[in-house]
Length: 167
Image 1 (spheres, rainbow, N blue to C red):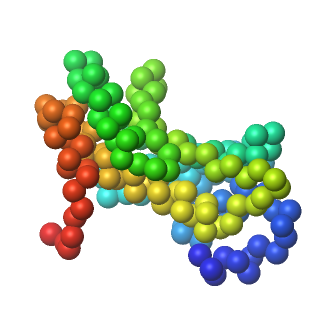
Image 2: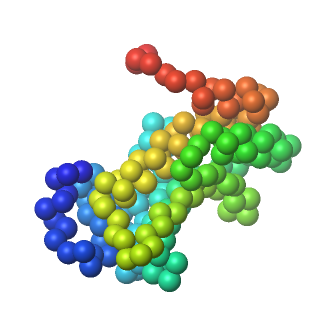
């Protein structure tokens, strides 16, 4: 990401402009929805993730929402919610929620930039990568809890185990 520094000359640059530069650098598909909002798609191992970054000047927060479709069976919803709680206990930056009406799993994170702070490209890159990594890490747990009939704790143990090497 240090290569992006030479593109950013002003401390007055908008956080969404920086997000657009990061997306361009990684060749992620993106669409600038408004001056204060960008949507992008990032490919993961398990699926494609839809991300939206939105800037609120009033709150001085750059909000990231990362979503993927999920339509769990109604009977497995309690297990999904328990896995969500266990997953959220295991992460430090951001958290999962399930938007039932839209049938979307959601990772949310807010970067507070109070006191006229600006977001560095490395911070935005980290936000996006952390969102995708968290979704990738817990995707198997959500699947096992909803369709594999695994107990929530057993499902989360799959996500908690560190993988070493390549199969």
